[in-house]
Figure 1 (cartoon, rainbow, N blue to C red):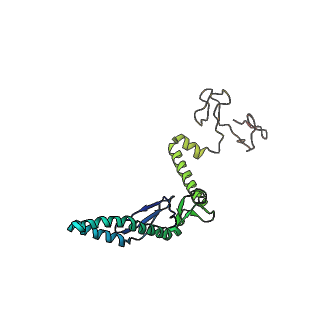
Figure 2: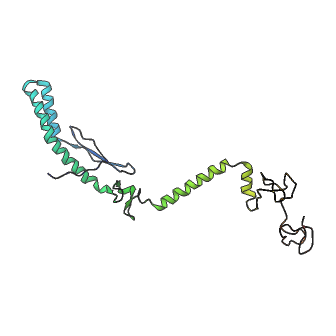
Amino acid sequence: MGKIQFTQNHSDLSTNQGFQFEFNCDRCGTGYRTRFKPSVTGTATNILETAGSIFGGILGRASEVGERFRSATWEKAHDQAFEEAMNELKPDFIQCPRCSAWVCRKSCWNTKRGLCKQCAPDLGVEMAAAQASHSVEEVWAHARMADEDKKLGEEYWKETIQAACPECEAPLSSNAKFCPECGYKLKQRTTCKECGAALQAGAKFCAECGCKSS
C-alpha cells in the first residue's frame, strides 16, 4: 500500500459512525470540510458491542472481536476516507514554493506572482492600507497639536518663521511680531508701502522711491 501524503493544517472529525475531515488555509484560516461519510465497519462494531452489553457471555466476547475488527478494518477504511478527502479538497489549496505554506486559492494566492499573498502581497491592497494608515497617523498628530501650532499650520505656513531674534539672538517661543527681549520688529516689510517695489533685507529705505521702509 502506498504512502499517504498529508499536511498539518487539517482536523480529523471522524467517529465510530463515520469519517469527516476539515482542512484550513495556513494564512487566513479559511476552512473546507468534507461531508460526513458513514462507516459500515463502525456500525457493525457498535452492533456487536451493544449485543455484548445486553446478553453477556458468548456475545460479550463478540464485542472484543468487534473492537479488534475495528482496529484493523476501521483504520483501513479511515485511511481510505482521509486520502479521498485530501483529493477532494486539494484543488482548493496550493502550496507556496517560497514558504511552503498551504493556502486557499480563493483569498490567499497571488496568481500573477505564483506565490502566496504572504510572500507576494497585492500591491493595490498594500497601497490602500498604507494610505489609510498614513491618514490615521495624521489624524492623531493633528489631535495632539496645540491650538497655537494648528494656527501656525493653517495661517502662517507660507511665512518664514524665526526661531531667534536676528538683533539680540534671544530665542522666540512664538510667532511674535516683536522680540520680547529687545523690541526688535520681527515682521519686516518685504515690499515698499509707497511704490510696491521689493525691499532688500535690512534696507531702511526703498531703492526705487526712497520711501522709508518701516
